[in-house]
Image 1 (cartoon, rainbow, N blue to C red):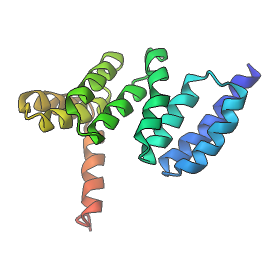
Image 2: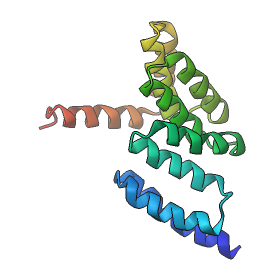
Image 3: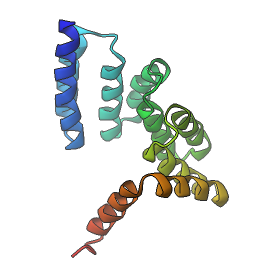
Image 4: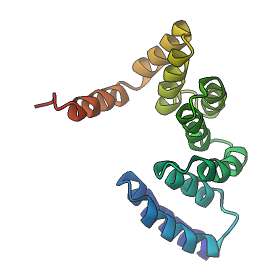
Length: 158
């Protein structure tokens, strides 16, 4: 139990760092956490996310594959594996990961969002529309957050 609490504290810090895009700092903490429990699937997942942020997709994939098999209800590893395939311009393979994520969490906004983008890249607009409609119907706040982020990037929000 003690190790579990220590790991949770490490992972809480890592989550904050990854949200702030401080991937290298997160990896330093994850290395320490790994010394406590090298088999924790969440450590592997967060390492995969950190490497994804650093655009080290091969390393990210290596770390994300194990938790994608071990974590039965957490869709995050599959979503990032799909995003890696989108970065590699392989939308067909990306969709398989997003479908797997949706099987774990049928309303996960990222899974539907990136599945929709994948289908657009494959010119399968009906399937893309289905994913975006699910997203809009279930997670309007997600859509608004994405729109606001895009507007800020384009300096249109002022």
